[in-house]
Amino acid sequence: MRAAAFFATGPGAELEYAEVPTPAVGPRDTLVRVRACGVNHSDLDSWRGTSRWNFTLPWVLGAEFVGTVAEVGGQVTSVGVGDLVTALLQYNCAACERCQNWRPDLCPNLTIFGTGCWGGYGEFVRVPERAVIPLRPGDDLLATAGGQCTVSTAWHMVNRLAVIRPGDLVLVPSASGGVGSALVQCAKLAGARVIATTGSPAKRELIESLGADQVVVRGDDAVSPARFARALLEAGGRPFDAVLDTVGGPQFGAHLAALRDDGILVTCGAHAGEIVPLDVVKLFQHGWRIAGFRIAPPDELRAAVDLIRSGVVKIPVDKTFPVSQAAAAHRYLDRQQHVGKVLLTAG
Image 1 (cartoon, helix red, strand yellow):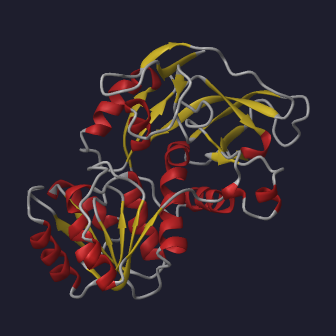
Image 2 (cartoon, rainbow, N blue to C red):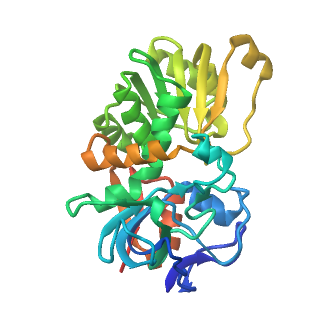
């Protein structure tokens, strides 16, 4: 099959559209012909090596995708050839002690598409039957292909890690991206008042349309964290109960400083910079908590798909690229000019 794969890692590496082996199908597997696949910042981190995952090269990325079943193993009963499907972006073994004790998210054999096995950046992807989610003909394929990762991440950050309650004041930095836009919506669903930030005035309208109560345009990225923290506090009218951060980088200290005592900052990304300054004295003086998003469990992945299919959470699509132009899609995403989701499509 043809796939966008990387054959080396590091700053000089790039995706190549090349011939790679078609995945073999076992008795309980399906082979899905990919129609659309979401692009995530973590994909860029993978071939650059900043994700710190180990890959057997060549490697095919793509955690979330939709397509039609092209082949089924002999023991598959839930779907058939031609069915429209998506898949849980990660799946557990269903047999170990962790899985048997209702903690599949702690399964030592947890497999993530595009990280632990090949993903949807190719013509075909192998999907175990237990990870398949059947779709209906009227489902929005681009939204479903591009939303599971962002919505499940946002839902888990809002409801499980930050535990947002009605009336909470929440800060969502860089809210125009995939996870950021989902965070705004999920925090509003939880009853929060949401202050969002963006680096571009052109992105304000979309962020407001997703439900943000106020949008702060960050402006010059070189602005001092202390001054930016004051601007955030002025916008919120009081210190924030929670910060839901996707970027890290130089404003991490400002986001912490805008928290109330015993407030929480939840982070799921560091695309503005992985290493940040941290004043530990202030951390314990204020009782601030910092939590990292790891993964969403299977029930939340399914809930995320349902939220997308029902239209409760919107997935704004910024741009699509043919999978053969995946390298261009990554360069476009890296410029951080997008507003919403970037996807790859077959053809």
